[in-house]
Image (cartoon, rainbow, N blue to C red):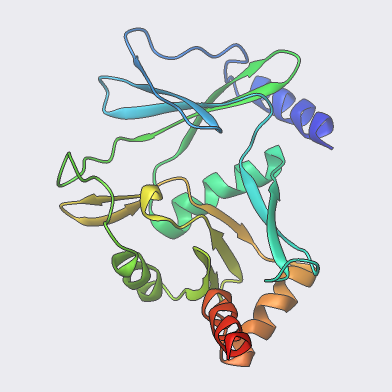
Length: 214
């Protein structure tokens, strides 16, 4: 599946004039990356990213053997592209695909605005309280374990941890959230959680643990 999607991605890039041997802008400064991306900072005020080693992040999937009945699995290129689109549409980001690097696998290169923190030494929110307020104001319901669901838009967000938010002078700005359209069994599961009146798996499991302790 990955190979077919990567082939289509390469063909699409060539059709639209995107480089397939992308390199960061001349003068861009390399930054420490994570498991998913190589990073560079450029003087144009943008961060440039390139996926690593066929790694396109994660995507939540239905898994009845999990305590929460869902689990994050390795994402495919199509999942990664959907995530970029939804980050722009839902959270007002400005993620742009700037090219590919084609070899034995395909890496996707993107750019996005550099989010300047209000406090350089404390760029991320210290607690989850501000994240909870941010997500609830946008119609998301807390599922626990840094996961959220939007019942109307049928969107699921995972990995909504403090290190994936920047606290700027204009409020929180999310970065690199895992976001997707929930479908099939996953969608039905999340809708059932909402209908139960107790969708937060983290709290539910804590309560069950307390009851067992008694």
